[in-house]
Length: 338
Ligand code: NDP
Image 1 (cartoon, rainbow, N blue to C red):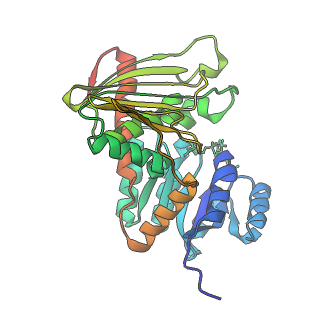
Image 2 (tube, rainbow, N blue to C red; image 1 turned 60 degrees about the vertical axis):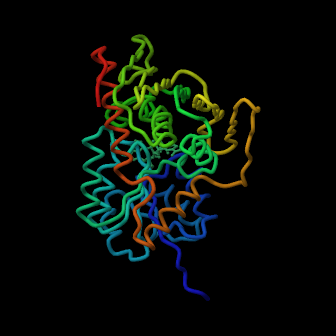
Image 3 (cartoon, rainbow, N blue to C red; image 1 turned 90 degrees about the horizontal axis):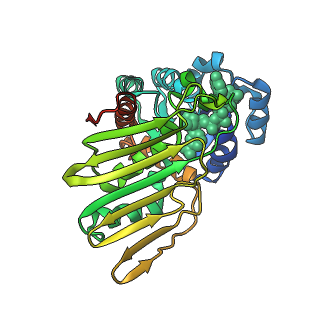
């Protein structure tokens, strides 16, 4: 039998994303596979391990995390816990000499995220922030249209990403675990994608947020945020996000010669891109793919080649720098310069 040259990953945290997306995606990856699982619930972990063709010995508790050091087949650790735990497990993984793939948001603020970047640099391991949309052909076609001049000089950018959170007890609504509300969880897609499409960084931000006092869901984090961001050359962006509004993600870029519309822009599949100019509207189509398989394959390729991932840790830090400024603006009522 040919030697298995795929990169082995340990998945940390078996929640919804791990169970429903990452484990199935790894199964179809040519370059990555799940070699171990880390979980606070041993029975659940054993069940997933067996379903993957692994054994109980491949399922670790958080207390046993350090034992991954002895697992030469585990080259990378994928952190899929609540946000405030990313730093602890990313840092520990780096010190064990494992490459780190970390879910978004990278941390809970810029300082926290930078600590992850520093730990990985010191340990000499690769770090990738899991910005799945930056690996889709739709988002790349949009980027090519924006940066290739198809739309002419850019003027206006707009993006909404929201979802409804019903359960007041979920970690996403707890500041200590989540770091914030809808902004770092779903609004981050709007922010990250506008930066990706334009290749530009905002120079200033202004934001307002709403936190309804009587709603048990929003005791600790904002329910909604609306923000204005100033990009270079007078390009102006609006971003809106909420945990109390249904949406699948909207993205618009308007230039002098044309515009693009992606709606939905951020779900796992079914993205729809439209490009419009004076000659009409085109809707390019693309072959099927799994966003998480694309991510696994990209990071596995980087581990083999030693190349820096397309979305490194610094990319995750930069979004936190801007989100910190958005929260500061919402708190002070002032424009915040970056
Ligand atoms: P879930 O709540 O479904 O799962 C989180 C898992 O983390 C839990 O099941 C648990 O796994 C583990 N965990 C460890 N400590 C805690 C704790 N104190 N409280 C709750 N859970 C804990 O969350 P998601 O899977 O939706 O999200 C996980 C991460 O992935 C987040 O950072 C999120 O932002 C990101 N995400 C990214 C998406 C994307 O499209 N890229 C989509 C969804 C989420 P166990 O029982 O095994 O220990």
